[in-house]
Amino acid sequence: MKRHLLSAAMASGAILGAATLATPVQAQQNFITIGTGGQTGVYYVVGQSVCRMVNRVEDANIKCNAPSTGGSVANINGIKSGELDMGVAQSDVAYRAYNGEGTFGEKFDDLRSVFSMHGEPLTVLARADANIEELDDLQGKRVNIGNPGSGQRATMEVLMDAKGWDTSVYSLASELTAAEQASALADNNIDAMVYVVGHPNGSIQEATTTVDANLVPLEGEAVDSLVEEYPYYSTVTIPGGLYKGNPDDVNTFGVMATVVTDADTDAETVYQTVKAVFENFDRFKKLHPAFANLTPEEMISNGLTAPLHEGAARYYKEQGWID
Image 1 (cartoon, rainbow, N blue to C red):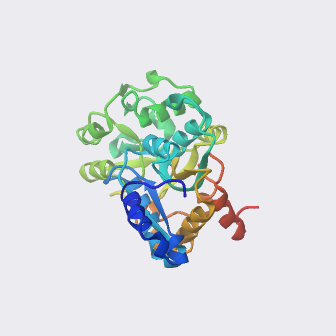
Image 2 (image 1 turned 90 degrees about the vertical axis):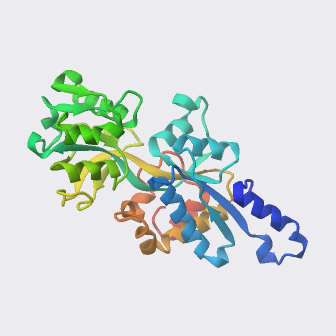
Image 3 (image 1 turned 180 degrees about the horizontal axis):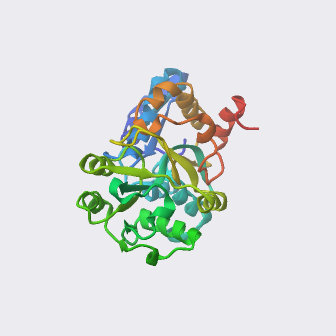
């Protein structure tokens, strides 16, 4: 492979001195580093879980590590600079990087998809006494639409545009941060809060354990049109039973967490990484509640906003999952 990083780089350096004495199997050993996110977040678990599957396969000759990083943008920049082999990134961030939009400036033509993971849906949580059962019920209510610059605010504005709404449809459109909104809901300062986040989530757990509150499904023509128009949006189901008082699955939409790499990453290494995950899939899904509803069919199609890496595509073709 062309890259090595952090402990992987040091380990490969140690091996280099003994390279002339190594057996052929040892000489072929690769080290891969997967960029994740903060240690308390799901991205970190994604990277650690992928590495756990890879490192279990002795004859793959791959050693994988997944350090904490700054998240989506940092991971894509790390892949581009050669500091990372793979990384976890939101599907919309990957889209902007591949197409050279927003803060990325220029197209990252070599960005490649490996597979998608859990959804990070636009999540609406409402006080039970506010009687909000569907999207249209938000009209006339006190809704925290998120602080300017936040992911929830941006996604909520996209949904509002699709509905033909502006903030005047609410009796109050507050701009609290994600950290502030659970207590605001519990204190009856707002009727509903919005959050773009993977599940289960601590803020929503906090809110649902302090006040009777229900997750609100986001469905209908406006949502369907957004998913059809924007390749980085997908329909997402929040599993029932993750939060107190919410036993049923709830349908919504949002971005996907995706594992990405670049075109120059060794095809055999990507192939072996993908194989390790899918051939230990039941074990993999048990490593975090957010993985419980994953299916291969969705992971190789939903939210992939850059072309598939050739190593990943090879495995999926072997399985008959793609042509």
